[in-house]
Image (tube, rainbow, N blue to C red; front, top):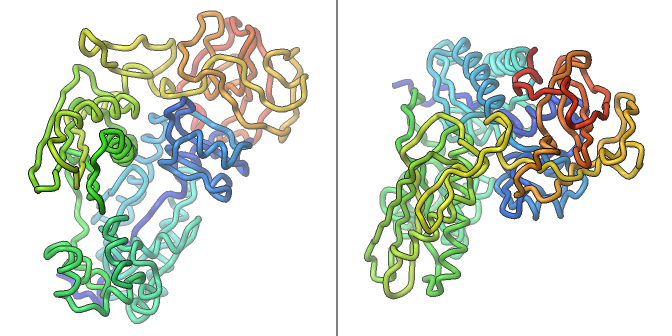
Length: 486
């Protein structure tokens, strides 16, 4: 293995990936706050642009909370087929730059280029600059790159580089950079471990590194404590290597105080499901099996599983199943640990908005809306959507007038996003559409038999809007990939 002093690992992380893709392919939104995710009562933010993050919105936050923090944000349904296509392009670029590649998720990966062994920081910086330029040229998207002596330092460096930057942490400056950072910056230290360290006065990586290894093991456990202590001291010899597809995605939480009320268990299960769901979505997969693990105060562990006929990545469905399983897994006494895992993966997109829904007669397939799977996620419904305050631009009262490029675009405010689309009003805000004269566009608003479309793609720059009769035969649904490359 390459000595740490000669080793260079780089971590590439696409900036606000889902939201950045939307801003790239819908140029009117380029400098505006964008939230990607479900707009229903249980919708969760899958991605937030940096313009939205300024107001406190972030990924994995309930959409309702994010919209309260950033009420002027445009809310869009996810377009997973488009994200997957762009992810494949990013990974292809990385593969051209380095034969040693380890994808971590749909929007980040590690590389360990053999030609950088023993290189100077300046040479690594030049290499990283070329990599970022190649990703931008191939996809049109920004990426942040970090470099260091191992995976942990490279990951921290890429976080320090955000947004759209490059940070090389030279081996000689490693301790000076890491030591002042919050201990939560380390992989493997979550809320519970972070709180346990805080209680003994450890709040920075440097403080953790200075602890005696036996004391760390006593607080965090033997194996885990030893590994985290090594990472805090900058010792990270984990190899960068291709990883096989995960057989399971899981998350668990150990509570400071045992949970004794089932309402508290339900709340905790939902929070854990959000973390699992985020990784499931990022991987672009669906899951058929949900498993819940519960450990009681006397350390007895109980598990319950359920396998559905259909794969799903719908958060509400996963939460409903996990909550029901938790009721069977939780025994007498308080609950000290809860975990949720999903497995039985498939790569196909969900069958519908809610792929399989529980009922008294078992699991049934939900009615699929008349739209392609890539846009059948928790999108805005086909009710009235107000675009801005001026009546001439309201989809409900549009007259076919055309906006000039750069006109103000207000937030999309879906009306009843959990409702099935009305056959007379099939369009949903965020749908990709095509018109023989105007080309590719996306629905900004629909209602009362009218639909307002902004015609633009990544190649056109900001486009104009036009309002049509919802039944106009020239207006057809389009492949989301057409918004990136025709």
